[in-house]
Amino acid sequence: MSAVLPTAERPVALVTGSTSGIGAAVARRLVADGYTVVLHSRSSVAAGEAMAAELGDAVYVQADLADEDDRVRLVHEAAAHAGRLDVLVNNAGISRVVPHADLVAATPALWRELHEVNVIAPFHLVAEAEPYLRAAARDGHGRAGCVVNISSHAGVRPKGASIPYAATKAALNHTTRLLAVALAPEVRVNAVAPGLVDTPLTADWTAAQELWRERAPMRRAARPEDIAQAVAMLVASDYLTGEVLLSDGGLNLT
Ligand code: NAD
Image 1 (tube, rainbow, N blue to C red):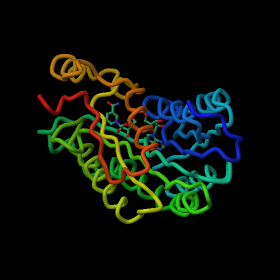
Image 2 (cartoon, protein in one colour):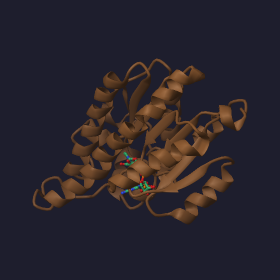
Image 3 (cartoon, protein in one colour):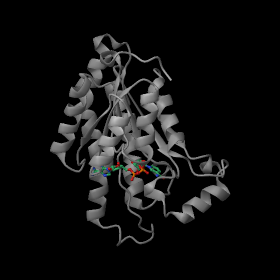
């Protein structure tokens, strides 16, 4: 827990998809670390507003990240809240379960839907946020702006809910590295690649839950707070950029 700074001096973090699951844990963790947080989701407005009220000077913004205009509005409303934007956590994402061998079920429409939300939207949000993130570095705040993308172990290994999902996360990992080079030294860009995390998204993924209990060295799926800790570590680490931090309880080792 950091010393509490006056509102105007507190750094600001926008966390997409932050009314549930991993995003909510990241938002709570960044508040505990001294950030003013901008919460966001596609549809759960009441939950977002209640959470914002609970988290002090937080604010909630609704936006559909499949919609280009909404993405632009989200970033500018987030930066307007406290007059700055220091951190962007691209957490919102969608998954579709399709057996990997069922190629016909992985339709072009499904590929496009996943690609729009999991790859194009995070890139577009970084592009819109770039001037604010650079300003955070320049205007005497003393630290680089920071982006953390939430990808997946499915983007690192040939695994995951479906081939299109895994491919979007692999694209996000590579985009992370490309942006790290393009935006340095004023903006750092990293990713966390979780394995299975206990969230509403995975509540009925019983086979994966069993796999993690039996095969992962840590013998369990991650809790959202475990991933939030990895995000907070990357946010706090002023020298790290271009990293994709696998956070799968060691499953990849077995
Ligand atoms: P979740 O379903 O609890 O949260 C997803 C969030 O994304 C929600 O807040 C939702 O509003 C938002 N979202 C989805 N589509 C959107 C859209 N079109 N516009 C705006 N917001 C949208 O899921 P979660 O498990 O917390 O997942 C968070 C991230 O972590 C995702 O990117 C997911 O791919 C990734 N991930 C999750 C797991 C896991 O096991 N849960 C594993 C690896 C990676």
